[in-house]
Image: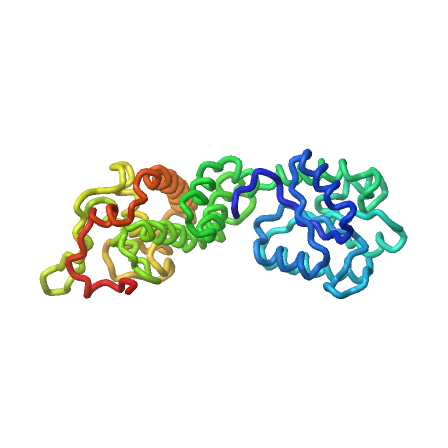
Length: 351
């Protein structure tokens, strides 16, 4: 989820005469309304970047398809059905609101009761399931802002804004952004997830680490591993240690010689420990004596989530350090001088 200065609201509205005015008023309320003329376009935006949106506003008499006629019954029926399916698929409900400027007689019956989870008090106080463009827009904006600000994910972005800003500045893949969000929310909002479900997210920590290392490769800080990031060798190079191919019953081979450490001392052991704790398949038992058997470990500490939570916070420090390091070290050729590939035949480097 990219960080936005304004609360992002997906708005289905096809009346160009009111779009600019309502968008301007929303801006002063701290909202950015992004308008789409029909549900087809809005659904596409919702599916492609679900975590961007904090709220959905539906103009009651809008189009289902691009070439459809305006129909409140058809539009609301199809849009609300799709919103419900996406919420279940994404495991997060985005509050939605119906905003109308026309006849309300056919609207109320088309609005299902799902909205009562966040908007029941509005109905109790006004006896309405919708908001009027003529009288209720300011109240709607206030309610959207309130519900968004109590959203755990938005609060996480505020608490860790420097971390999310660093991800964007470094150009680290959005996948890392979404995954670190998933790891940070349960630290501050433990009621959002069961411990056993949170402990299933070690894979997300591994993906974040891989995305950081992949980004480092684009600047020559690490070799370009291709599709398969060698997390353990990357951690060795960054901490000034050789990347070694261990040969059973033979002499070990130094594949990459690190000429100097890049990480600060405080992160040496942290990153190398994460490399050992987060194998590609966190549920598999590894024959490597240095690897951690996560299922056995978690059982030994009564299902505690502290290990993964500590890794999530350490990843935040790693991202912040990397952002500051990268500001002064963007020369790819100079960065690549800090290590030497001795045995390229053992690498799966991009050609």
